[in-house]
Length: 145
Image (cartoon, rainbow, N blue to C red):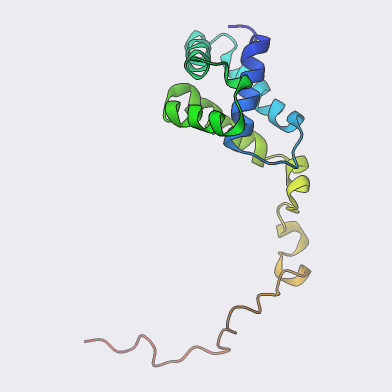
């Protein structure tokens, strides 16, 4: 398989968006998922067959891309656990959430180790948690039977 058909590309994009819905993300973020699946399908007939079969199942009896949101979820539940479903899910979780532009859209600053961690940067406002003890109680855990 060389490239996905326009129907397979659009369906896969809609599947990824239905699996991981974020109103703040444009279709371009999900297009990265489609491109990666296309890369995996190049020269791999098994993946190409998985894509074709999975889309055929989703499109029966109505094309997935033409379904309303609730109907798309029902179609996904119907094929959940199948090879195409698992391929899109596994690819989307990496391609979406390992993307600094997506992080920004979702309000995540990204890794903070190089900035000294989160605590000293305004993320220490956990006033709903009790303060930890300054020293450990030496008698805790020392009672053995």
